[in-house]
Length: 169
Image 1 (cartoon, rainbow, N blue to C red):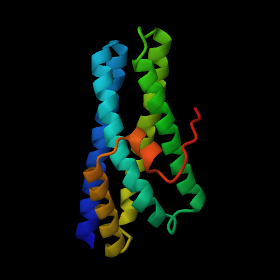
Image 2: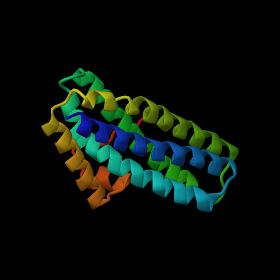
Image 3: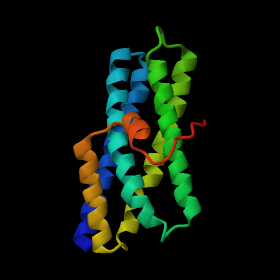
């Protein structure tokens, strides 16, 4: 069982690293007003987060309810809700004719909020060590299915997600 938990932890951490690095590059792209790069990075972040959030919500979070209080899992889901909303707002900012200083400040604020979730969420992997092998297998299978289907964050949120996103700042 330790091998499966270690595999999950490794994959989970690598996904968080990809999201972290993409978000940090996105901050730089906004600061440089590099619209082409902003769009590429938003697309990457949206892809990475869609695949990741999906299996978290469909497989990981339900198993963590037995460890954490339901209120904490609900908090994690609300963070995903806000991430969906902030991603939509970043797409809107990137699509503007010209990006203002205020737009850049807003984008950086949104992205930094995302970075704090990446940091906090990475710690959840340690909890998988106490799950049964069967549960860890299911999480990994759900992850594989999410990757295979390849829905980005927005497509997943509107086409598949079992929860309507509540967009709040």
